Length: 221
Image 1: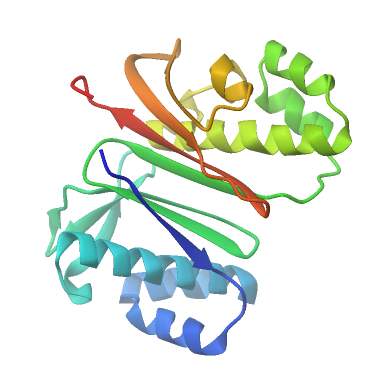
Image 2: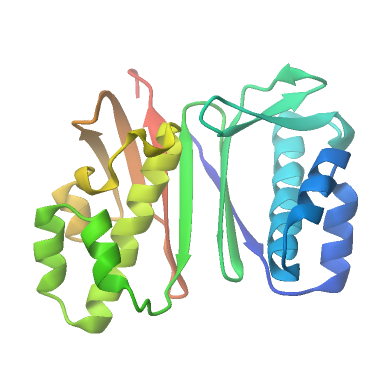
């Protein structure tokens, strides 16, 4: 199944920000106003405007017909003239990078993290990784360890976001398949916590950021 990935440049740009804000609806502008910092407002407006543009293109509807609502656990879905639109999407941003993933159907998650040092990396590893993953990370030196951790973290976060039920999944118990831990860019995985579903996991990171997408596979896939 085809998944479209869009990168959104979140660097300051007054013209782009004004254009993005103008494309949002009234509810979105109220949400924009509630953000406490200009950087948070900028990231929200640019990502939301880009999401609107790609969804309107894929669905074939005018911007004025598109709205959003949230499922029980908070995951948003698209409405066109008040009717649920059969399209899957997910959004993530970190620093100056935003990512939008869109697919015709199936649960979908995307995650991005800038590759910047974290003072609490040991605590993050402890909270995110399985015992086997921790042992593998401990065998790496500082730079390699950070790179490998961000890779694992974004894959897991993409899977959690695709699953769509938030904290009902224990991230540390979601052990990434060995082939992907050893460097495979893409794999099909199943997890004991969600045995009813197979997931396609893909590393889409660059030298600037770690990123991953997770997509639910239908039985016929």
